Image 1: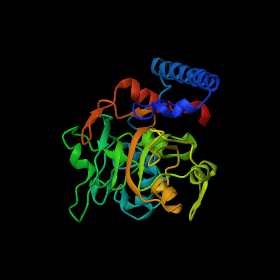
Image 2: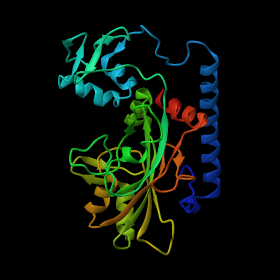
Image 3: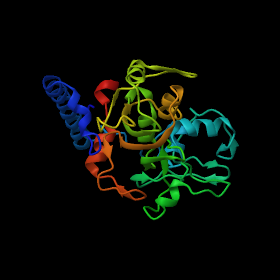
Length: 296
């Protein structure tokens, strides 16, 4: 793996020492450059992407900055006719607006969030990743209800039977970045199968599995316990729906347990199941500059 985690240190053991050292040096150079850029942006006025009163921006970006959802989901809300601008319906997500405009979503006036919040949850099973559920099922927001008085939403999704790391924020820009494929945000999953993973299927997954919506390519694959081939560690950057489960189901395996143990460099250390913590300033800075050199 490119990054060690508390759960999957053994994944790196199968790489040659020289390859590990070279990969480590390369990542240190990238991380050092990104840290320097982040520090310079904080010190230089005007370098950060700060939304000031009266500044024009696309309508979907305004909705995201109001802490409602990501920019992509906001664009869909606009196209569905749920948003009005100064009392008039608007269907174009790119319409320029400012904080002086009156923007309503389903009749409720929106305002840009004044305080950005970043929360990391270790999600248990049997909670659905949504802000509300008409069927009355338990949602992930029930677990962080006392974390903040700001309106936050989950970045990405974990299905009901999947546990592990889930990030919440009202920072629409960051949510959009983490969801965009070009930033290749890495996730590591601990997969428990109903039977041992065969050598042939191991190689097939590493080569890429063809699914109904295209090829699924993993970044790394390994066994945290060499003698237990039912326990598999998988690193992937795809955000497609149920991608990990579908990879193994395609090969005839039943996923008994699925746990996301790393997300965008964040791990479950000091976050027990069902609990959450607020991200540190350093972690927020790293997330905002994550893979910025690659994206450029």
